[in-house]
Amino acid sequence: MRDKHPFPFDTEARGVTSAFMQIVGERFRLAQESYVSSHNVQIFSHGGAWQSHHSYDPDRVDQVKTHQHEMTFDINEIVLGRLDYIEQSLTEIVNSMANSFAQSFYQVISDTCEEHGNVVEEAGTLGEQFLKALEGIELSVDRDGNVNLPELRVGRVMAERIKNDASLHSPEHQAKADAITRLKSAKAMEREAARKAKFRKGEA
Image (cartoon, rainbow, N blue to C red):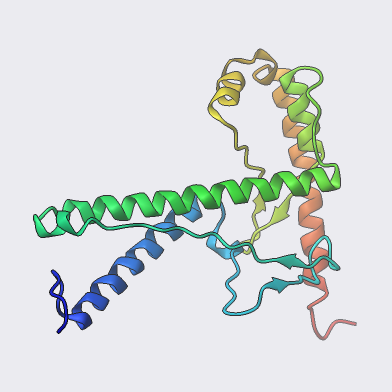
């Protein structure tokens, strides 16, 4: 004899689970977009490693890292009619997944910068550190032909420092930053033009 439970219809129960997981996936992808564009996300249906021959390090082989999240439903909450419990549980699992992704995302960036020496020492003013960081990066061009400008991501403490540090807000600093940005933008457009030229046909 089968035990009784609040959802005795297995087909319907699977439907509820499927719908729940679909919403989780949709909300997680939205959260993921705040860190990296979906255009820059690759999806693999099998395998545990991949190698990108067109990257900055074509011989590098990366291994898949698994993120695991679990959640437990208190069925009594559902029996009592607390349907908001479902929304609460959904929000908690999505937040957990998003936080895990963010930690992994920033760790990869940190490790890559350390590996290639693309770091800025805490010497001089904050403005000088910012200019040094700007000089050490290369800009790229998006699919619409626009230069991708650098994006600054910091914690709350650093955000307050940036907001109040005079060395970042002087006309002299702004002029230097603009000059570096213009130069790097021009170089990015030149690289993109050279890349596109490789695909032109019928030219002598």
